[in-house]
Amino acid sequence: MESVFEIIAEPNRRAILSLLVSSQQSVGEIERQLRMSQPTVSKHLRVLRDAGFVESTVDAQRRLYRLNPEPLQQVDVWLAPFRQFWSAHLDALERHLDRVDQSTSTKRKTRRKTTQRKPRT
Amino acid sequence: MESVFEIIAEPNRRAILSLLVSSQQSVGEIERQLRMSQPTVSKHLRVLRDAGFVESTVDAQRRLYRLNPEPLQQVDVWLAPFRQFWSAHLDALERHLDRVDQSTSTKRKTRRKTTQRKPRT
DNA sequence: CACGTATATGCTCTGTGGAGTATATAAAGG
DNA sequence: CCTTTATATACTCCACAGAGCATATACGTG
Image (spheres, each protein chain N blue to C red):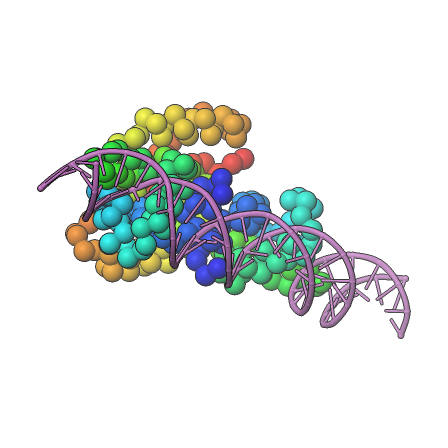
């Protein structure tokens, strides 16, 4: 399981990463929010930490885990050559993202230029 | 193996996808270029096609496979929330991409807009 | 110090994915 | 037709990842 892609192939790990986007969390908090067993959470966090996806700090008995975006950037880099391809299917993409924006928008995010998307305006 | 992420977790499948960026290819061509056994190629193509990553057309006895970017866009969508995070580590990203550019022997040093990288010549 | 809380880790079991080998299918070409 | 070429599929084997359970470790508090 060296590869970044294998790491994020696991649904629970993706869930953990997504959870950490909002703010850092302790193991127990993750455990409750994602309703996974404590050993399972700890094991996945171990994997994520070894792969550099998260970092932890000690707060007494608890460990606070926070995101480290670097490895995800590698995914983005791999994705890059395929983006050129999307232009062909751009309208489909637009529609898709609009759908996502709706279903995800618990907190008003005006979708911004997301680093690479066509200047939409 | 329903998830898009599990699909691209497999190195050979990623290789196939990357290969198809340049142009469509027959099974035999993929087999030779990636030096994988024919059944292995066919099986991975099956998975990729079922997941919508590729499409095929018949050319006599051979099947030509071409890329379909849609599923990869889902990966991009998932990645989106993390991008906001990268700004914090932007310089690290810059350095990282520079390393990648080098090791990939890209001629053009002028990297633009991040992510919006030029199609390889 | 003893106990409760928080997290990590070892061990076992099970499912599943990928490779290899052999074989089936199908089209082209003599 | 018979053969060659191109691709798909069935079957078996093996490795390995993830979950559960038990247990170890460590810190805080009375």
